[in-house]
Image (cartoon, rainbow, N blue to C red; front, side, top):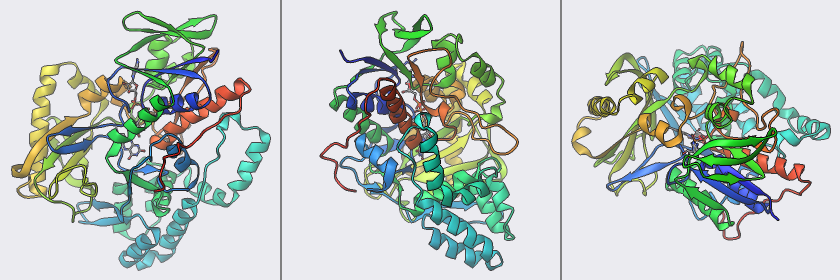
Length: 506
Ligand SMILES: Cc1cc2nc3c(=O)[nH]c(=O)nc-3n(C[C@H](O)[C@H](O)[C@H](O)COP(=O)(O)OP(=O)(O)OC[C@H]3O[C@@H](n4cnc5c(N)ncnc54)[C@H](O)[C@@H]3O)c2cc1C
């Protein structure tokens, strides 16, 4: 009889594990609290507008370009969907410089940077060449947990040409890289554009490499349809997707996970259990802190700065056409503005006019995103009435700001959505409303993440944002593929993955 695998969470890593489980002959079932797939990877329709609350770009969108593209095609994510790419990635506006542009093509960006700062010609060329080199980098097919000495030395040979670039950036922040430029506009643009005080410089060059290689794009229709396509692939492969089912406990006997208990006390036995949900919730609540005690202690001792901060997104459907404007603008303000009780100094404004399915012709779907502290999030969450009042205040203040930025903006607003604070906690159950897990740290700190197996607990695996700090959707979907490779290896089965036949070329 096929082995039974229960997966907790129909987010992207959970759905991916389910798809690969089905492809490899397991009998899988996914339990998901909410009534739609994707977790954070979602969006919503209001009136004639679509508001995306997740992806802005996803790596692996270029057809035939290695591991991630194959993975998305195996998962049906690229099925019958155009990929839209951008020439301009971002416009960075700071008090001192009204514009600092970041182009997706590294050569074009290099020419732009040279026009700003001939004095930095050498540094600019170096950065551009590093981005271009990394654009060709591929990742191995095999899960790192399964790699033996031979695989590792083959990998190390393959990565030889990237080693110097990796070593150059791996322990640095964007701020460190920026400080190497003489030109103040470049320094400021990099730091504010890429949240440079903390962000590892390697994340920046890898991302720009993906853009340069035309391998990072937006799949038409955004996050909601992206998640639905993967969910359809899962059910099309025979998977059993159970919505409205909240797992409250992983049942353990003799140090082996043997099933799950739902909120309604129903018990479901299984041979293997995979949790794709919040790492702290899994360890603390689902296995009652009985295993991974060291990891739980580490999480409980974490300083908030080592977690991604939660964010608020206010979205507007606007009867104005912003298609001639940069689709992604990052603002750093001279002095903080207050939105409700939140002091905001940095905010991101996006419009989605490049995708005609997000708004009627001549109109725009616009989102304003800014960080909040986990404490503010928690205080709001305690009281629903207070939350609703604060939501109104914040939305009003954001509108006032948008009027200043775009005169007449509020008069043209036809639909509004306020998301993330309440929604993230209720929708995903994530600790402190996080959406990218632990922060990828650089120098002076250990790189912390959880691993896919929990010491001492058999037949149990963990995947999701807590295992890849700062990761986006490709790394998370990869967890599902990796974990199924690990399960197949333990069962002495050959792992197989296949692309559905109807998948067209992009
Ligand atoms: C604003 C924003 C922008 C982003 N931009 C990008 C981007 O540009 N590119 C990119 O690649 N990625 C992007 N991401 C994605 C992000 O980086 C993460 O990949 C993603 O949000 C992490 O989610 P996850 O899959 O680990 O889990 P989550 O999305 O948190 O999903 C957890 C799931 O588990 C379910 N669940 C929780 N508890 C239980 C339980 N007890 N029983 C059953 N089910 C349960 C929840 O309902 C939910 O469906 C963005 C995310 C956000 C929020």
